[in-house]
Length: 76
Image 1 (cartoon, helix red, strand yellow):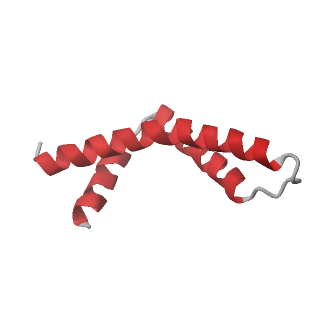
Image 2 (tube, rainbow, N blue to C red):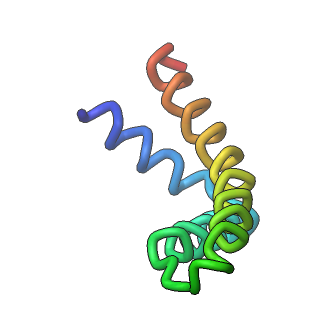
């Protein structure tokens, strides 16, 4: 658990404006997916778009985080 916390602190120290923007867009897309209160007719379209945005923004964020945790695990 402490390694995860240390990895998170290191990630926050290394973030830049692009990472923060991706995180905000990712959070927004997740909120849209959770709050899908549209009509039945529009729900599949909304879910597909929000899911695509979530995946497209979440992948780079998690790649960077996993690289940092792997680096810390190796002891660099």
